[in-house]
Length: 279
Image 1 (cartoon, rainbow, N blue to C red):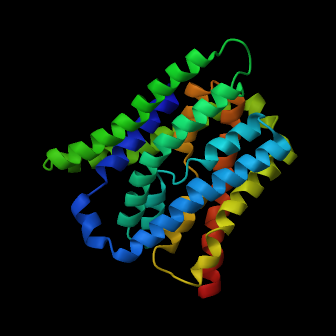
Image 2: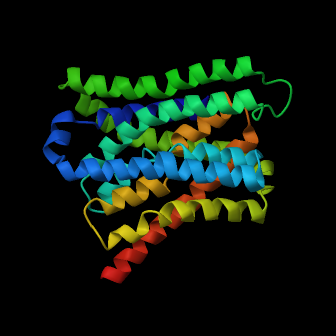
Image 3: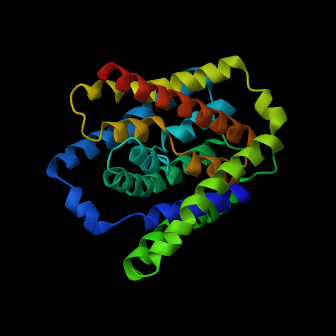
């Protein structure tokens, strides 16, 4: 409940950061091709190859379900903030996040139907398909309604959104961090039981995501960091409550948290490496 509430705050904050006029000013025709390519990589290439790898090797275990979840959920809410800190304008990354959140809505529903129909969700007999779909409905309401509400509040309450945005900026990030720490402490035994092999599988998945974007630094510098972070930082803010509310699998949640730690390290190392080479 704490995690879902903190994610709802993050989604509302991100929605309130969305400015349609500023998006139109910064958007160019070349962005269409860039967004199209990024969409293909994140919603076709990565999910397809991940699904094939899961079926062929690790199967629908906890780590397998975690990777399938992360594969269909690119672009974490923190990407626009990180991009800003790295001296790129945030408008493009916010636009991608809003667009990808809408696409992720469709993929989450499809993933849930496939897993529930195939009987890959139940860890025990307590979590029936009825519980899964009821959890999915609650998840969609809790996650996407705040995003839409944030966008609407900015559009129709222009005089009030700035103070609320300033308030939500530290509160949303802090609450999510506290929720993650609380989860790790509460599930310390399961977190510490993650094997080295499973960690290496998660690292390999993350490096493969980064590898799809990394070479394009030499082709175009414009918005490159946003592309790398969008692809490398999968959306743990959507994945974690999905694993808990819809799948009802704490073991899957543990692997998602491990992925978040891995992605934080590898993405920043990739950015630092490119800056070092170009300096």
